[in-house]
Image (cartoon, rainbow, N blue to C red; front, top):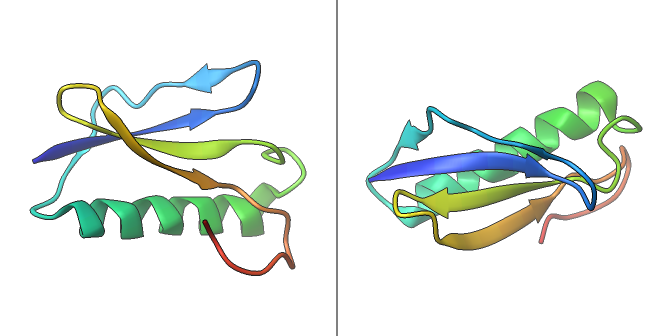
Length: 76
């Protein structure tokens, strides 16, 4: 199954046009958390207030993973 990982803020969206293939939804969620974690550690201020929106191949959003500031605990 193909999943898309858009980056979204209140005012902007960066669309993922290519997506990634995963067999399970859980694997796509783990991938989104890894993206958010990477963005947190590389440029936390730049991405503050953004999230990784995970959509399935028909465009249904099923989870939003916030990009947190460095030092914040946990992911939702």
